[in-house]
Image 1: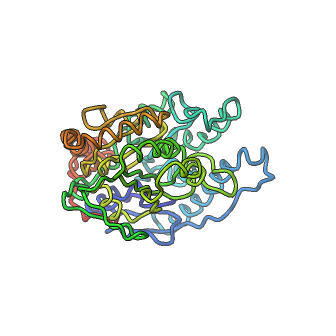
Image 2 (image 1 turned 30 degrees about the horizontal axis):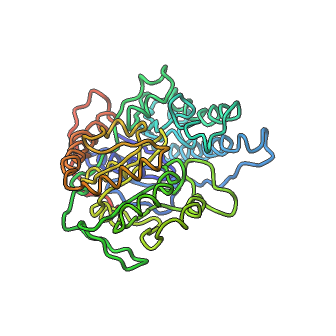
Image 3 (image 1 turned 90 degrees about the vertical axis):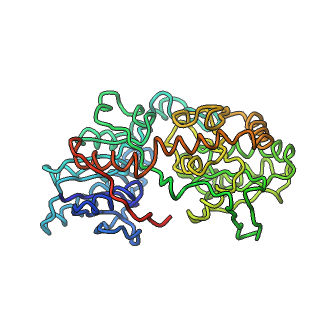
Length: 421
């Protein structure tokens, strides 16, 4: 079978599925924009050019700038698909992420192909991210209009799709009820053999030369970008109290200085600095370590030595880092928000706290550290949760292969080499 993947940042969520299909003997092609990408065994990778920027003076101005960009990208992908078609390539299955407009014209170019969509998120639904945090909300009609425009290409892809997949029940439920019957819930999967506890683990913080080990008192916080969507502001506001109550603790913060999901910080600064400036005079900055974005193997070592891992999020896309941390037996203190509640049951395999309450967060983390030996059962159950429900080879990849090849297919996941972090 000929299978085509489309994702601007390929391999992204398809890092396991694409080579697994190739290993089963299917002809797998991927289309993206990155000039360099991880080499996946058996997968032929092609790029499509995309550089057109929406015009600021277009109708409705900046309000529809994002939509204009997605339509421009849809045209770029359509042109690339036409070129593939002219070369005699006719995929039987097209698998695309619904974001960015890349799936927009897939059925127009390849009408006989099954279109499968990765339906990651749908904006503005009750109980979701929009309006969740009053400190950064934009209430009223403008917010609803923005969500509606952000959803146009997502809805169009899902309407055209033969089938779709979301990684959590919460993310599936955010989509229109009329279309949810198309969506299966299949997580991307966690390599539980790679992300496993290691009582002998250690990590060196390159910028300081500091070496941390399992027996040290280490509090970790990880996000792609240090921004309100991932609770960075709540975490920082908890630190003065937390560091005062735990005088031997060190805090390691992983993440970039930009904004991936929410609005950008005020011009000339970053959310990292906005909230650091708010609290730094009240705490010992010698015990707070910002390490930026780190290689995945370094992140693994850091989580393996973590005493308590803090994960906070709006009701939004669930981060791989949470599940990887649980797979490594971390003691997790997390926000009591969807979709975290799908994975963590308070007092069973982790601890939950109010997203908006830094005082409660500080107290919960301090108590967890104080009683770390008594928390061993929670850590064991955290790992078991991931092994039972999110294991790549045993649970998620077989389901994803069945989804990709047709629900009637009987598929066993081939064993793969772990891709580079």
